[in-house]
Length: 443
Image: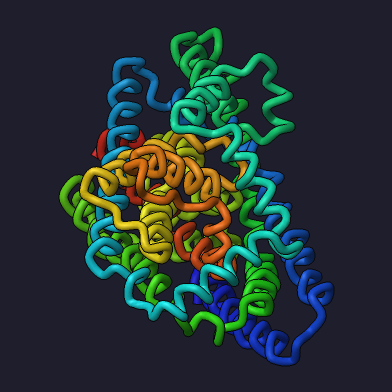
């Protein structure tokens, strides 16, 4: 048994054990402080070490990727193809999610009593101390964020005034932009900049060695984080009036992950999508456990290059950018969640409003890239856009309606993060055809 297979088995065992132990803690009505300890230790053991590596890896990997491509015109082709792939797959995800929720209409299949109970409980939960942090972010987003302001935010972060300040703030967009410029300068510098190119290549190899050390903490960290999630939510609470909404979200994510993206990969990447998915299993399982595509990035890079058959040139360019702006799963989730809430509150959306959901969710998901809790911010932006488009005699959806779905958000967040990382990985595999490594070009 090789190390990759052993690690995969251990991660799966950590997931299963965490779910079982978390359900036991939930049924025993364990104190919230004890359950919160699992989240703290999970972050300490796994998320924080991985997050520590994100900024150095983004900086170094993008520089290495650009210098290995070399030709500026070819870099433009690869960059344009990458952005086009991200836009198309996100748009397809949003259309899929909107079609599912508008067709099945989970928010209208409840009795008046169930609907009223869900709304009351959701609005009370929104105001409770348990969700105080989420509420503050949502209210801040309502005050400050629109689609245009979110895009202005992303443009501002693309051109930072202080690189070290951006590192301290974990602003990967600014670091990616600087890394692109530096990599391009080193690529055209020829012999003068060759020592710096070799230094970055050596740094990248050293960082990947550290990643290979840290990943062995994954089973423990995943166990802790899943125990916390299930211990707070409880598996039994997933069955009830909101279960149909959850099934539609999960069904949409599964359809996008197992049908839409594989078809795109088979056509444009000329690869067996399910074999590639199996090879990327380590990164996908880690994304599920941590619910963070950024924290998963070091492992995604390592897995894509060493097990997934992606070229280093493509992976080093595509994956850091994807972890920041490509959110297929999040965009699909936001579209379903927003339409569901409007249905639950008895507000019927016409084709024009659904079209606004599709366009706004796609654009906002990209524009919210540098904002904490991007999913919540995106949802606020979409709700505001739809509310504005409604006729004057139609009531608007209150912001507190988001409380209805906060209780199950963590579970769905884990699932949509896996789809986000899978979408990034498919992009890296497709772009590998445009940017193969030198050894592959020589064949």
